[in-house]
Length: 343
Ligand code: HEC
Ligand code: HEC
Ligand code: HEC
Ligand code: HEC
Ligand code: HEC
Ligand code: HEC
Ligand code: HEC
Ligand code: HEC
Ligand code: HEC
Ligand code: HEC
Image (tube, rainbow, N blue to C red; front, side, top):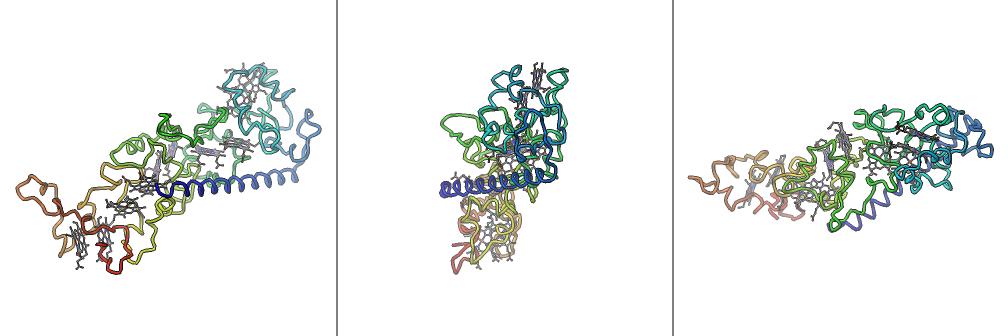
């Protein structure tokens, strides 16, 4: 797309902005917790500052494993577990991360009993376990930013856990991998994750006309905030049209002559994921237009399938008289004489 470069930049800036807010929110949260209940959390960390002591699990002040991370990895030394050491979560120099607090136990809960008595760790992740305690752990640090509408979102109420989509032990979270170029034939991992539960959308993405999902040029999260938003269908922007304008800015106008259905809602005519009609249209013309327009003077009577080329009485509107041949500016016109969108 024309504005791809600029838009990418904007989006990244937006992200950075969002993560900056998240960081500030996290810091404030830490300070609040720190000032309200400064409890020395563990004997193993007598030197912790108030900030570091303000752990997400401040309430379970005992039961930490002796030796911290090294105790855990004595038994759990599989690559699939240790790869977390290559992620941002293990940056001990960043006081906000789990590894700057109680290491593995920041997420899995105090582990002394797990090691000594061989009971399962307090917090376990995965579909076999209830989502709420799992998400509670993640949300202590990630409540703000993009997750501000998580509570009450469709995914939250359907009982999805953060770890359903995120692989926090993976060295790089495939959901966030942006560098999926078509020539590598790499699976677009984000969309594949979503397709697993949304086969209908997969079907739409494979229709004749679709947004370029398969090419990796558009991701689900370009239009949706899967952590929840204020709109129906968890769209990123306040309205459906605002979401489209992010990339199709020229459709925003302003126009001298507006076509009301376009200003109102792009999905009056387009199926956002994909369609079997060109340019993601709900239906091909003239039927698309005639679903709203059946003017007396013109276009006369509504066309039906019986007027196709080889029928006894071919319909002129189906032969070389597509509405778009004359009404080219269906999204709106800036021509002084464009009131009928013919120029
Ligand atoms: C003495 C060895 C040992 C140590 C030390 C140990 N674990 Fe485990 N852990 C186990 C065994 C055995 C299992 C069960 C293996 C299984 O179910 O595959 C297990 C399972 C787990 C699971 C998976 C639970 C599940 O059902 O999904 C987690 C998470 C876990 N341990 C975290 C920790 C953490 C965090 C620490 C450090 C505080 C730790 N472990 C220390 C032996 C150990
Ligand atoms: C940021 C939170 C977090 C931290 C920190 C963390 N884990 Fe996990 N752990 C998870 C999640 C979430 C899962 C579920 C699987 C996944 O998302 O990769 C998990 C899964 C596991 C499992 C089960 C793996 C399996 O294949 O069944 C073990 C064992 C485990 N973690 C051990 C550890 C150890 C040891 C550490 C410290 C080196 C650690 N975890 C640090 C969140 C965390
Ligand atoms: C103790 C606080 C803490 C906990 C608990 C925690 N995180 Fe994080 N997480 C962080 C910090 C800090 C970052 C780095 C943020 C940054 O650099 O802006 C981060 C980064 C991330 C990222 C972005 C990674 C990237 O490459 O951009 C994801 C996704 C994430 N965390 C998911 C989770 C999930 C899922 C859980 C629960 C299993 C979890 N986190 C638990 C503190 C935490
Ligand atoms: C339905 C799948 C899904 C679920 C469930 C989910 N996420 Fe995400 N998450 C994503 C996708 C996709 C992205 C990348 C696009 C984006 O930023 O919206 C992402 C991005 C993130 C990021 C990094 C970008 C940012 O906004 O800072 C964090 C942190 C994060 N998620 C945390 C969480 C937490 C915490 C939960 C649980 C409360 C959660 N996610 C649940 C799919 C999911
Ligand atoms: C574990 C299954 C699961 C995964 C993975 C998943 N979803 Fe969902 N999602 C659901 C369920 C269940 C619903 C509610 C029923 C429905 O609308 O199909 C839902 C609903 C939605 C909705 C409609 C919300 C509304 O308000 O109507 C959107 C949009 C959505 N998901 C996008 C995504 C995206 C994008 C991804 C990938 C990042 C994703 N989902 C991954 C299970 C999942
Ligand atoms: C170009 C923007 C855009 C992209 C990209 C996009 N969606 Fe949507 N999606 C929408 C809009 C707009 C709606 C609301 C449709 C409506 O209200 O008519 C929607 C609705 C949904 C719904 C609600 C049920 C439905 O079909 O109406 C689900 C689920 C969903 N999208 C999942 C996904 C998944 C999964 C992906 C990635 C493969 C994705 N979307 C990519 C714009 C998009
Ligand atoms: C993340 C950016 C992005 C967003 C947001 C977006 N699109 Fe697109 N759209 C694209 C790209 C990229 C193409 C492909 C352009 C190309 O191939 O030249 C495209 C193509 C289209 C096409 C033409 C398809 C064709 O076959 O030529 C239509 C129609 C369309 N988008 C409608 C919408 C609607 C409606 C919305 C809002 C629901 C929307 N788009 C939101 C990026 C986006
Ligand atoms: C009244 C029906 C209608 C509405 C509403 C509508 N479109 Fe279209 N759109 C069309 C038709 C018809 C075409 C095909 C035009 C052609 O082939 O010349 C099209 C083509 C497109 C294209 C691809 C060709 C181009 O002109 O760039 C994009 C992108 C697009 N529309 C985006 C949008 C967006 C964004 C909205 C919402 C602001 C929207 N459309 C609302 C009917 C509509
Ligand atoms: C969702 C319903 C809807 C669809 C579909 C639709 N229109 Fe419209 N159109 C309207 C409305 C509403 C108006 C404003 C009517 C008015 O002002 O009296 C309008 C106005 C117009 C006008 C100007 C009429 C005038 O009196 O000024 C033209 C020309 C037009 N549409 C052509 C088209 C074409 C061509 C298509 C197919 C590509 C189309 N419309 C599809 C609803 C629709
Ligand atoms: C051969 C060119 C041509 C084709 C094909 C065409 N139109 Fe028109 N249409 C026009 C012109 C020119 C006007 C303006 C007439 C006027 O200003 O009085 C117009 C006016 C209109 C109007 C507004 C006048 C009214 O009747 O209220 C609508 C709505 C309209 N066209 C819809 C359509 C639709 C729907 C189709 C496809 C079925 C279509 N047109 C096909 C040229 C065309």
